[in-house]
Length: 219
Image (cartoon, rainbow, N blue to C red; front, side):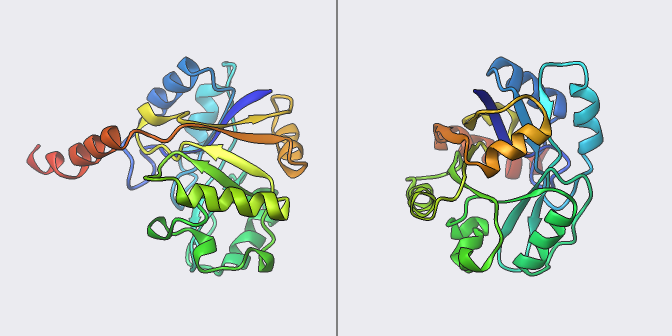
């Protein structure tokens, strides 16, 4: 099985300063085979990540984290921008039109725009949900997502949601596929994927946020 982190943020997101080179170094050190840069409402980092992984053992899959009217949705596999502030289903339809998968990140985390806090998944044509997102405090939201996925047979993913390169791979998926995008998509659709990993250290996360949001004001 291959190791995949499908939800990573780079400096192309407004809330991250992570360089693509640092993300790749961490991915290589943690033996991650497949990554996706899923920046907020932009695919501007796609060209850089594809160029820098071209002659490496890492498969980079295009992605984007889109702000719909009711919460966030990953356009996994999308190489084009999708407008923000569309309804959830309109956003999902755009993702599918571009040949991507609609994955719901941190689905029940209300303070991070979890889509299923305000939407009924049965009314949405989603392809998978994150059941292990590394950015959690006590794990309740992940547990609720895992329970839903098990009950309703929804494919599950683990992902770091790293906004700082050192956190890449804290949570991840093990996926039964070949190292190409079509095989990855087929495996997710068939549920041949498992979520694994640990939560990002809240001490390290707090330290990072302090440096990013407070100390930078005095630079």
